[in-house]
Image (tube, rainbow, N blue to C red):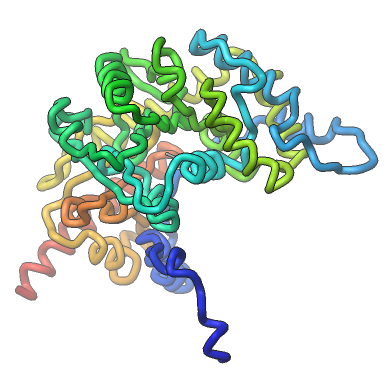
Length: 408
Ligand SMILES: Cc1ncc(COP(=O)(O)O)c(C=O)c1O
């Protein structure tokens, strides 16, 4: 190879391959060996994408598939405005919303518009692992305060949070409801972050892509509902999870901060347009689905949450806190290298020809050490498969631990 053609940016070299991707070769090997694998490692819901998405695409009757407006289609923005009014009683205007290619692009554009190299971001760890790819490529330094599993991953005390703020801290990024923790922040936590953001002049980048999935008595409150912090708050929105439409790649960045939105708009213009047909499909979802759509799915996920939580709680040696929202649960295992266990489950173990794929939790932490005895389980597959998966986890854990004991 020509040596100079290996000359990629230092920025991209900063980005580590995801720990999930590292397991793929082992998964492929297991599949080749004829094993059935239950995927508890990814947040790909198995619920059907509503037919309204496809109907709207079919009804689209134009001769040319043109670029859409860089802001996104007006019809879709108007539907999102109605959604926020109806579900959160927040008043957004057309200029507060840009449609993006998934929530992922909304996050990237927001970070690009806020951070210079060397600036610092405040996060509650564990957090969504893909943020790290964006933080690393943009040379954003991560200052994490740690959320304790014993509190259900709720926020630590104010002093602990502000001890991580420096003059270079520009924003706090939170996910509510949480991936990977399942935490749903209480109103006092949301208000506390609001106060801190005001006091220290920080943006709040609130990733609310799981907003309709909360179980029990606490609904997920949006940062957009809190008065007085409108200039600080940026919401990350997506149809991927709430409508089970991950492949549509439709999200949005939402903020009342006019100056910031003007900056983000430059990036929207540079990439010209989001997929027109996917926006048309998304309009169908927001417009045509009946009011009970979210409630039906919320009940289904709550059922799955209970199966997973109740099942795991009974396994000896495992610690787990009950998730309150989204569709993930963090689990502490009696070992110091869960990645090895996750690989072993694919390569060396099966229960009647079946095994499970899990996420080692290291990638969800800045302080990697804290994640090495944990895994994340995603419970967005159907109940029967979840029940089998828990049996596999229990049997696998027992065998793995006894093998380890023998080799010591
Ligand atoms: C917390 C969180 N934010 C953002 C995303 C990105 O979603 P998308 O780009 O599909 O909208 C995900 C996907 O899993 C997520 O879990």
